Length: 280
Image 1: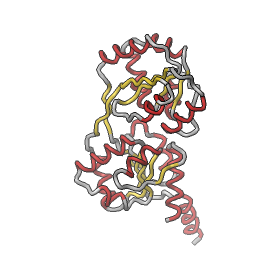
Image 2: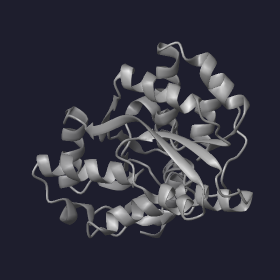
Image 3: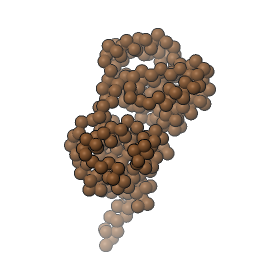
Image 4: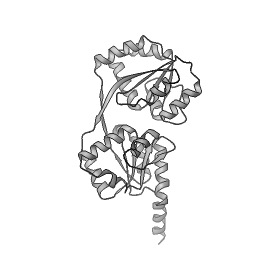
């Protein structure tokens, strides 16, 4: 009897106990998510929604040399992927000395803790981090910095990104140069997706976290290729969560109603999922 009571209490404390928690991010950069979910007794699924295709080395070198001829006040990095690909291509093409000269003359802004960590691992100091880890947060930070018109900013990023920051900063007289260093493509359907599909069809996915607007688009594309009624099935997910307002907008445009995490981190979404599940 006592043993049963103890076991019951342990299960209560582990809200994710035996529940499937999925996220639109591949396993490579997802160790923290996996660790947290398992610690809470859950079953993590890392869904790789996109392949990242770096630009041709010749084009990268040509563009980067052009960038180095200009004076930037800030570099902004919007994801760990952009850091990894950008720094990787700089090193592969023996351009490290040029980047170091650039960064001596400007401040670096990271969109969130994971991006900052990736930069610091590569010996790049981060001067600024927005309080809200999103594009809106970046915009608010720049507004607080009261930059003069004509200030030039560089963002290495995906070629499929939206124009939100460029448009808003442009209206403030700030010159935002975007260096499109990679293009995303929909990921190939693999065993992870097949397993996820079966779980989803059997209403065994309790939490699904969307990490970006691109992840939403590629997720929908993959689901279409698997001939799944996405809207009907996702409405059966107890906690459909988005990281950031732009991800929320993308989901809403597809007739899905997510709950947006106020803290735009993996930890923030996990805490939100726990609160949602505790009410069910």
